[in-house]
Length: 228
Ligand SMILES: NC(=O)c1ccc[n+]([C@@H]2O[C@H](COP(=O)([O-])OP(=O)(O)OC[C@H]3O[C@@H](n4cnc5c(N)ncnc54)[C@H](O)[C@@H]3O)[C@@H](O)[C@H]2O)c1
Image (cartoon, rainbow, N blue to C red; front, side, top):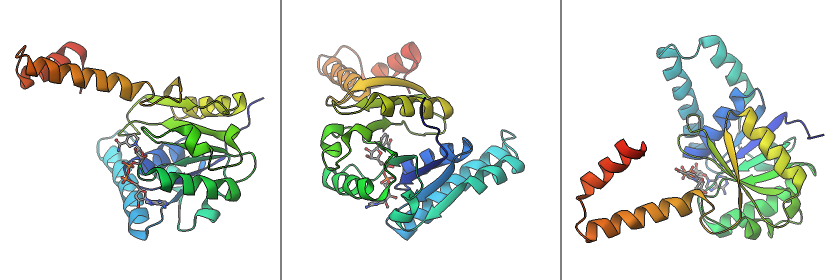
């Protein structure tokens, strides 16, 4: 049986971390949001509140829902406290390999022995992040898209030591968060960035060959393929 998720810790309260924490709180999970910088933490909490207030103004959510979600969300200024009871930790700090390695080494010591440790990295090796811990079987990539509350895709990235149980928990989390997951091997660019690079390169080549103007190439993708 897959472990139940009750408590989630999110490390980093920036663009992605705040969005992830917001969705976790909306799932009914006790959500602990941590940032190493006080101003980062308060900005993250303010962004979440602003998102909820906008939803109320548009009639998409209610004050009662906001109150319920807010009660699930806690800003915590100390990482050890934030992860102490976590079943799932999702890291969303800047895309700097050394920083992520250091944080995962700390998470392996600070989080409970059963906790799944996930990184929202867009491009770094999950195997190398996992190598900073002594529990690689519990390490996985959970690659969300911006803005997290609205984007449906969640790319789950496994490395060779990620256990089946960890993948199963990540899939349960994805479904609870209303996301559609895809399961991808830990290779450079995963699936989404790799596809994006091919499209971008082809667009540049077409422009260089004079096939169409940049504006018309954009319009082709936007109207022909619903590309943003
Ligand atoms: N922005 C996107 O569109 C996007 C999409 C998918 C994945 N990602 C990935 O998500 C991760 C975060 O990106 P972002 O755009 O949210 O960055 P961001 O700069 O908006 O936020 C990063 C946050 O981490 C905090 N931080 C810095 N050092 C920290 C530490 N040691 N401990 C805790 N918090 C710390 C910062 O104060 C900041 O609030 C990156 O790995 C990025 O590649 C970003």
